[in-house]
Image (cartoon, rainbow, N blue to C red; front, side, top):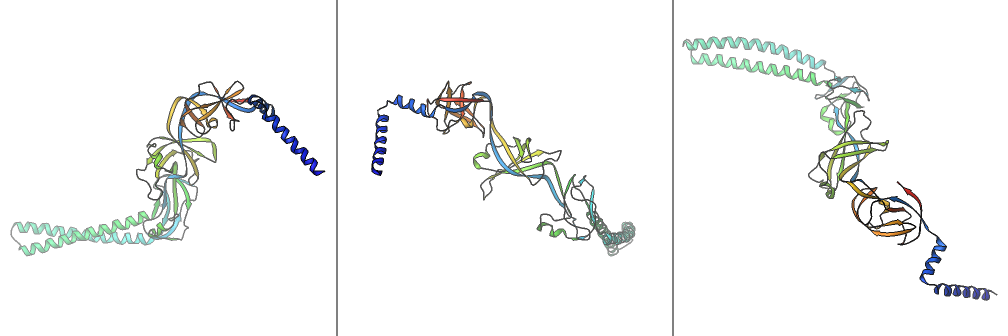
Length: 369
C-alpha cells in the first residue's frame, strides 16, 4: 500500500516538471507574475537642492575655562563663602585661610622696615656730610670709605626690610582666594578647618578648595583621521547635537586644528567652540559634532536608500522598474548627489528595491516627499 502511494507522488512530480519545461520563457514570466503579483514599492521624486558632505564625531563637552581654586601658601581654611552651583563674579572672595600668623609677621616686618628707614636716613646724612668734607680735603680716604660702606649697608638693610614687608603682604593677599573669572562653582572640595597645601594639588583632579567653571562657552575635542584632517580648517562651521535636546542644533566654529598626530592613535586633535550663554549645554556630557567639509548648491539629489551596490538605482516607469547605473558625487548619511544616470522629476524607488529585477512589475504604494 505504501509503495503505491510513493509511486503516485513520484509520477505527479515528473508530470509537473514535464509540463513546466514545455512552457516558453514568456509563459514562465507570466506564470511567475500570476503567482507573485507586482512588487509593492515606495518612491520619491528626484529634485535639485543643496547637499553638504559631512563628517560626524562624538566628543565630551567641556567648560572653556576650569580652575581648582588653591591658595599659593599652605594654611588652615577658616572661611568658605560659596557653595556648589553658586554663580560668582570675577574678583569675588571665595574663601580664606587663617591669617593671624601672617598678620603678625607683617607687623613685625613693618616695624623692622621703620628701623631700617631711620638707619638709612642717618647713614645718608653722614655720607653726604663726608662727601663735602672730602671735597674740602678735610678727611682721609679711609674715613670716607668707612662712612660710604655704612651708608651702603643701611641701604641694603632697608631693601631687605621692604622685601620682608612685601612678602608678608603677598602671603596675606594669596590667603584670600578670589575668583579669577566669572563662572559657576562646580564643586566644593574642602571644608572649614582643613589644612591645605598647594604642593599637593596636582595629585587629584578635585584638589583645592573649590572648582570654578566658566561654560558660557564650551569646547569639544574630537580625534580626526589622517584622511579627513586636510578637509578641516580653523574657523569652519560646526554643529552640535546632544541627546537631552534632540530638537536643537547648536552652531559653533572650529577653533583649533592640531598640526601633528598623536603618536599612539595617529589621529589629530580638533577643537570646536560653541557659545552657551544660557548654560544649557553641561560640561562632562556627550555631544555629536557635525562638520560640513564641502557643499554643492542646486545639486540633483536622491536618498541613500535608493542606491544599490554604490552605483545602481531603480526608476519607476509606469508600472515597471527600470535599472539605471548612476554616477555619485557628494554624499552624507541621508542624501547623495547624482551626476549622471537619472533626470530631475523622475521617480526613484527607495523602498522595495532590494531583490528587484530590471523590468519587474511594480505597484507604487506611495510617493514620499
